[in-house]
Length: 274
Ligand SMILES: [Ca+2]
Ligand SMILES: [Ca+2]
Ligand SMILES: [Ca+2]
Ligand SMILES: [Ca+2]
Picture 1 (tube, rainbow, N blue to C red):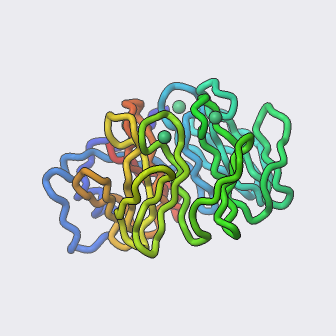
Picture 2: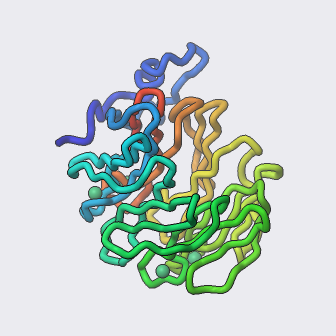
């Protein structure tokens, strides 16, 4: 099944298709950028793009709370989880393939497909699985807003951040280990543990750190819902998406760079910028 539809449609056409007003003018470079759209999902679905079939490309995927089913484009549907679960797909066993997984807040239990359930965390915790120790396996981890503490399974608890911070763990220094990090909306500042704080973004921005360039470290980036603008540190800003869209940057085409993308919950449509 082909993933890319209308790949060469210019951004101006794309923006027009979104029903944006005439005040939006795409620059020549924006028009040169291709984008594609694919409908995969329905309202109420949670976007969970990741590489589920180990081909090096992120797959369009949604978790449907109403029936606890995962729908991955090109892969068989799989029922795994319950309606109140939080999907936490990641590669927990280090085979390169993303594992279906959910965190059940009511019992603080992690269910990773093919593995025994693990109790770790409390009901109000926010799951933040990443590979924090660099062994190529995602580590079960939670952030507890009430005390601003990170709990990584098998490691000591680490106080870092405040309850109102947005969690942005990623590998910012290129050592192949995810760094504990937060984006503080009040001052638009990024704090990565052991690294200098960096102001980048505004209070209402959605942080979207990812590997946008062909280097080894995650880039600071934000999506501004009010204008549908992406700001990637060290690059020019560009328009892509509208208010209400969920930014889902991933490497969809397998070139080892994250591609800006949004999932539109109202229509279940994905827009990927190449
Ligand atoms: Ca894939
Ligand atoms: Ca690990
Ligand atoms: Ca790191
Ligand atoms: Ca890519």
